[in-house]
Amino acid sequence: MVGCITDFFTYETTKSVVVKSWFVGIVNRIVQLLIISYFVGWVFIHEKSYQVKDTGIESSVMTKVKGFGDLNGQVMDVADYVFPQQVCGARTNISMTFDSFSTLRFPVGRTTHIRWTERFGGGMITGVCLNSYNGTGHCEIYGWCPAEDDNVYIKPMMDVVKFTIFIKNSVRFPLFNVTRGNFISTMTSSDIKKCTYHPEKNPFCPIFRVEDVLNITRQNQTALALKGGEIGINIEWKCNLDWGLEYCLPKYSFTRLDAPFVKNAVSSGYNFRFAKYFMTENGTEFRTLHKAYAIRFDVMVTGIAGKFNTVQTLIHLVAAFTSVGLGTVLCDIILLNFLKGADQYKAKKFEEVTNNKASLSQSPDSQLSLKQGIKSSYDSGAISLANSDQPI
Image (tube, rainbow, N blue to C red; front, side):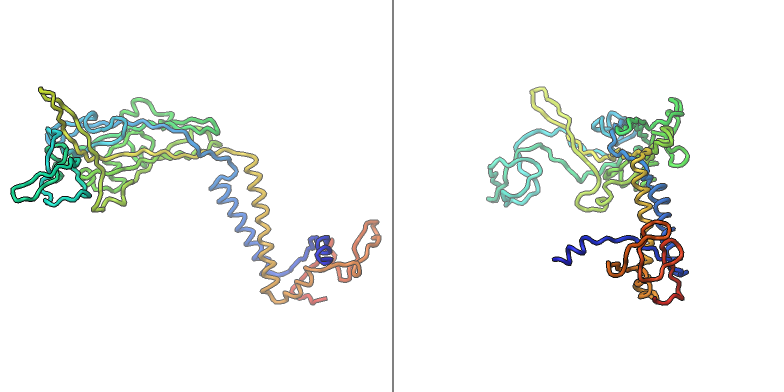
């Protein structure tokens, strides 16, 4: 207990030991150079850690699709192939079931021994068993007749590759109260009418040809038009507000979102169903069922903005200066454990001073000094240790 109290009330002070070793000196400078290079190159230049960042963007996207196509002899315009109208996408293939009436029927082609747990895609089970001529029966269901036929092949509308997509995007960084749009300041209305996006020649044009997008994502256009799919259009905003708002510009990239399911035999592509309802003269309702295969375009917006901040700068400067001291730690490990003469270095670096070994006296220059029982160097309290030194 007394020993713990004594250790608690001890005082440690730094002791300078100059080690004249080329190897240790080179290791020390290399480590310091690597640490400084990391902070200057990566932390400050690449990551711009001297800035405060805003990633909580507020964004809105509006899209328009334009173009004409021919689907099975029928002219299709934007009102026909964009569904719903607020979504960016184009139908490329439609399977239609005409004049379907809601009626009682039994499923054609099913086994005569139907279990209640069997799933019926054509309607709801009524609970009535319809007997047939051979004594077996069918479960009656209530649904739309005739049923949908998935085996009908319809040539897809390949004109979809000629369509254009117009994207209008605005983004706001609330931390800095900065709002930007994807139209550059030098762009005029005539420029928008004539331009088409190109990743190198025209990277800021907001009009995209479907064919160009599919080529960038390396898609099979025929297979995509036949079965449908999902294409992602990502608008990335990386703004360094220290350079000015005119340099805060969008960057577009494209990807196939449903890529894991392209070769999936269970569910591949993208399709949906909708119906148009009509009424006969006697008041009976019937419908035309559409199964549409479409290319769906999902527009995603990401963004980050940064601006110089004094607090962030000071924090990372202190971290950089502190990390430079790691070179000293590494060199101490090498000196204490791996180099020849490690015991000599330990004797010079670590020393315990007690009341029996040291006394306070008045120095010639009227300052209190500590008289130690070892040699002192001539460099203001620092001990110089060379490879040729011998233990004292």
